Length: 559
Image 1 (cartoon, one colour):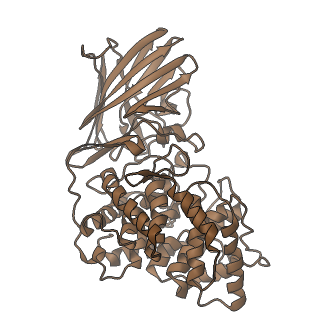
Image 2: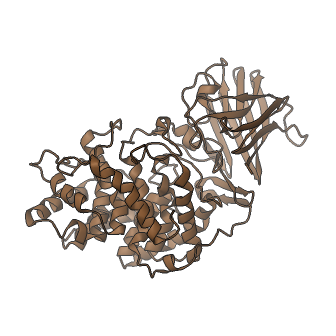
Image 3: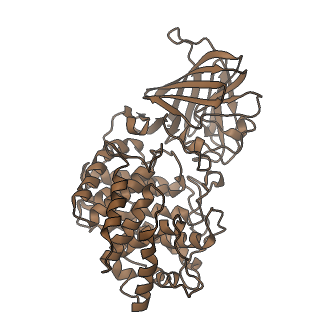
């Protein structure tokens, strides 16, 4: 699977074919299941219709049903009309795929339309050019619509587009990093949105801005490659994990825009190994339709903007299919990543990346990010460590450690039943943060990467008595091979690997606290990689006042 251009093309066909029986009669909507997102059903069914085009347009085939649906969905007199586009609207998001597809494959989507159908398509898409959208990567959506309209001969007003592009460039942080708008997020929206759309623009444009997009992407590639393990796994981190393959879409976009920041065989390898990593994961239902989840269907992982068609943003990974077979991306043999084990600091993101076991395990330490809007935002951004081998967990509740699934964080309670952890960290410098779970409790945390493990140092000043629970990585319960607990340590192992946490009471640290070891069994369906886990944890009881906790956390993959 995904060893060459032909197998990648077949993967697109395999993903799209199960959708064909689910088209509405007018072909404008795909009804993949019950929509529980915050937007209406018409927008959700447009989303499911539009997102496969991210893969079909580069492939350049199989779009007859989509051409019919484009004519129907943009006809206000048809019962399957998608509806007018509001100022902030999911419809605006999906116009990006339509504009992109028109730009890449007008022979598939445009040439077969009648004159009146073309007029309706232009009228409907042109709404996107006038909508303000959200002040983040959404500003790219009208830009992509304009690329498509220009390709089919429709003139557009350039000045508003220049203003949007100027705003997008203002989010550049240096060394190729962006923020996704004026936020603390430095997540996968940097590679699969900010850079991805910029590289599409660069691949279809020839101006100074396109060169800046290429230059930033080349710089970013040098950091982003560290987020991928030797087997192709990407570090699960942040929101929108249900977009799956899109985690590696950046590598194909580099090729599309002609950015040779790395040798072509290395760039190709990051994408193809990632696609192969997904091969044995349960990402689709029995009919072959992608599910909401990560390594398996996982409703707890869903954000409030995940409708049944949302996972098809995964199709962004197939952009290199737009390149001819003679392009060096395809003709150069795939090569492994030549990255040494060790620690790489990425200050623009407030992270450090730890590579160990000859690249088989990658851990991202995070201290500066948060998102309290997305469901489960604290777990997705503000835990201390995220792993390619062990993933991360989202809570099923906060009553008891089993509901909280508090891997890789410090949880605190004043009653022993209800728990709080870091939600909105205040960055104080490199891997140093401050956070307050209550008004009278202030915590400073330092993370110290030391491949293959890391230290966590917490200074806690509390106006109340507290219970604490600090955990390591969650490991698979189904393949457990051992566990042990004692005074100051806890570990558990499975076929997945070994997870261990221990108190550090070295005289060099201002601590004498020793906690009791315990192995917690979180609720099923909380971890993004395996459905049932166990969690080595240190638990303590502390009087009001100042105290320090220092732990060493180790995670190593199974052999």
